Length: 497
Ligand SMILES: N[C@@H](CCOP(=O)(O)O)C(=O)O
Image (cartoon, rainbow, N blue to C red; front, side):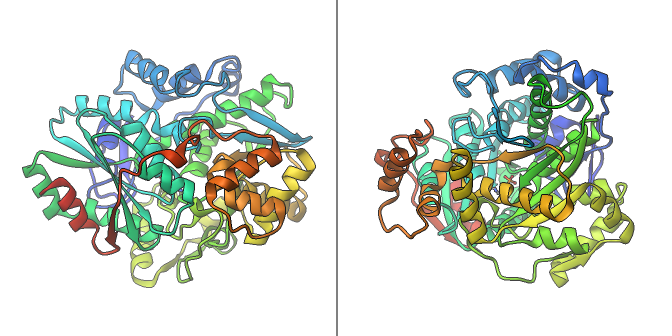
């Protein structure tokens, strides 16, 4: 399998090269040249496989330059009992007769990002070996809260790697910030940036494209890679849980073999929902994807109009991981939907730079509309969904999952499509305790975050996720900050270039 650039500006590369580069050096993202397709019978026959075996089955189709043994070792290490103690790595909870919640937060850092960031270090290490990379790899991460900690946890103390995470100051929850700041490891750096997530992500992408800096890195035996979903090695592992969810529905007798289901995905950088779309293209029976957004509803508007328009205020919400206006993986998605036409991608992304918006062609838009619907939740609607889900089903959800559930219910009442649906639950509620408790009580709470956690535990008789327990008493090891135009200098300072 080869990987090509969405912008047609790079030679086809192996998966090892795509993973070690992170993104296309001149701009653009790597995508597989073709999507492997399974027959329905073949998919159904995976029904009793555990998560590791299922992951290996999928990886082998995409990582054709990896040996079976390398893939199997990587998945066993990533999804071990120590890292994911439950037998089901991604439990599926039945909410009502046609709604299921896919809990993706049972990994070490309580967010769905662990599903990919526990394995990316292995994939990157193997890729570096294959590419005969001798430089130290510097992983740059832009985060709106969840990727940062998951990447730090995955890469901390990994030999031959340094990791630098940029997050928006005042743009993540208190628990998310504390999780990142308290990360140990000799090779970790965490920097708060005076700006929003888009500022972090744009700055990191600019650094990747900076040829002068690239040369200076080389001279100092470093090279960059990424742990964001721009890296194919981040996206690929996320395909697995769509298959797992479907097969679990089948195993539990909730659906017939081949029955189509809907997936609702709380969406920020578009990586998670795109992974679902790849699963569909590989043969998974899916009827619709519902793309759920918060008040930063640039994707909802895009899916309604075909116009991607970031000329709008960036809003801070109670679902901060989705506070994003420039969704990186939309580029991959558009490339897949427009029949791999990189000239159109170049044109649209040039317009995004100059006009802050672009309109896609009618043919591509029609194709997108067949499979995708976009809905969004206001802050009040997300809070109401947290409260109602707890009241009606005695089930505690975080604000991102609340956006997913609210969007699904809106989609159902607007469309009459009552197909069985899986909602991706992207984070454990305790990562956002303040918003969750305030939603349950219907009032503002002034208390400290950690007292709120105690109250939430007592009120709901639920337990804080193991990865968050004791956070209050951990020492903050990172205090770095920078201006939004100071990312390059900060990297140079941290790497002593
Ligand atoms: N929601 C993300 C933003 C970065 O997304 P990624 O999937 O590209 O890593 C976060 O939590 O940081």
